[in-house]
Length: 112
Length: 119
Image (cartoon, rainbow over all chains, first blue to last red; front, side, top):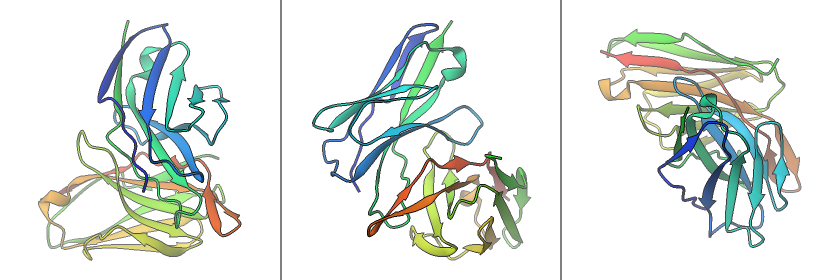
């Protein structure tokens, strides 16, 4: 399984944009890049995913490098509710059963 | 309904007890998952069911026994657990879409988990 590397922790101020990086230098052509987050005392929740092109949804944007060896999750205006652990996960379509394997993630804290 | 419901929310069991964790979803998802999460650690994959068949077992000890009686339900049967098995047990589901020889899984929805304490 291709591996991802994320910083252990990041800090942000409320109302400011946050850029959460993820390195995945061994990504294969059929691996999708997924982001999940886990708020305190809750199960993980899906944030966004993409393959090659940048993606936007109501929660965040995903910027994917041209060589696909890295990606960045962008929260446009951080709120206190965005404080969570953010996980970058590669999921290959030829992964039997679609393994969703969590790495260590980035713990995001948001200051008022 | 985009909810995955897990019961019970909390469970305390002795090492000689037999208990079951239950998970239910009504989104028509054909992939269902069990994860174990210790405090301050990421969730660890235990089992994956795809179209009601066990497709992945991540070398989980036999004291954990999964069961998928139908496409909406997933159980985890527990027997002779150890105190170190105390953790948050999470269930998840996702749609499984066949793409050529592969399977594309859409976003996974997670339950709130069962907090298990083994005494």
